[in-house]
Length: 119
Length: 433
Image 1: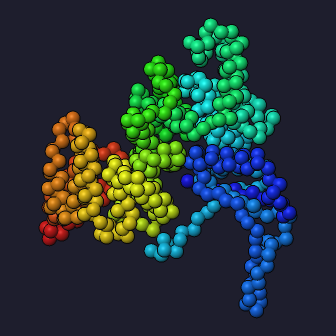
Image 2: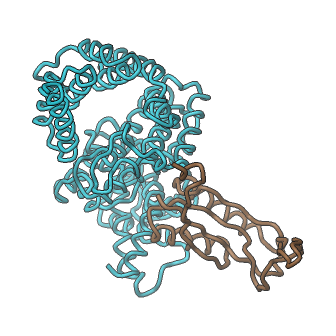
Image 3: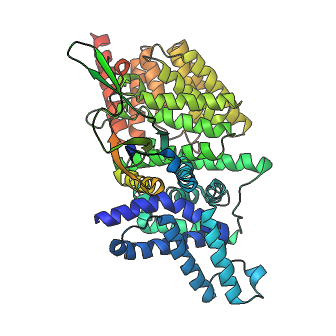
């Protein structure tokens, strides 16, 4: 069964303390529902990012903040196993309602791991 | 179908189970619950294309179902809570019903879904009825899809579902999760339905390819749901393991022309290793729960032996023989000795100890009588032919394989057997020269 990534975007100046209890409860309930429906493979929230950039002298430059200038950043994501894109969209719809945010849905394509593809 | 209808259908597929389960808690009848939910869906199909999909589709559908329920009650067609309420005012009943339905969705608990599964798989139903109800109520497939998967006319399938719902209602099957000793038996019934759905998709010899894949997917999804709902039941984990491990070979089971590829000839790099890992960890879980000797756990352990091996030769056939011994014992204990298990065991013995030992094991299975399920089972002469071939007894092998060809209707199997006949002919010619 194909797997899908649903990521939710947060504004760059997002303050987690502004998230109310109701939002937490909604997201928790949705996670429970996804688990009960047997579709949820993984879910998480993401912390602040550090960017890494290879410089011309071969040094890796590490800076705080996202690599690209953006008004939003990825705040977390779900990985779901669904029958098809339509079903994944239906879940993503619920995800956006629960998080009251905006997001993106993409199918995940798997590459075989090296030890699987050598024969 | 337009995009919006596809969207509504997808929303329905993920919401319907909990919706039906919640309504059933109020109506105590899954037939009525499903009808109310279906009515709500019809309303949605009328209104959503105009108004858009509501933010909380489940709550919307529940409200629509509630209106319908109150309508039916008003018309005196609904028997909900008839005994307690019969002397009271109809208005009061309506209020009760409305409140109950409002509460129901707020507190949909996993238990409701579990009750729904246990009811749909109730032993009072014929097995085909259990399968149809499960796919309809828990997987959210529609009648046409189920009919297509099982190659029966839609009308037949519709009647099957209708009869099943009627039987449940007439038998006053309570909408509940069984307790104590009863639980284990009923879990077994649920698991057998799920495995049947999986096998229909995995081994069915005809039908549309994609629909069969969908059955495998639905069965695995049911397996994952059950693991969540009944985490303490080892066989639930074991069945999920068995399905994951079997499904991991899907890509390798068909050649480029759609022909069947036997396990020994499969390109093992095409096996889905992520799936194998999931299957292995589910099996470990079952074993940790003390269920290593369960029916599904043993079957999963056998498949695990195959998945661990890089080639047929490297397979731990000795261990497989032992696992089949244990499986056979279970079938004897249940007083339903399985000739298929015995046949598979003979194959494993042939691999572990050589073809002569395999042939002995095969001969130990009593020659099937005319009423035995093995009497017209092509794999019996096919396996015997294989073993004879390995022993160099080509003339006898040819006879067996020819019998096997005559017994199977399956074109792909026939192709495989015909291929083997050619090999035998070649060997016979070489011997004659």
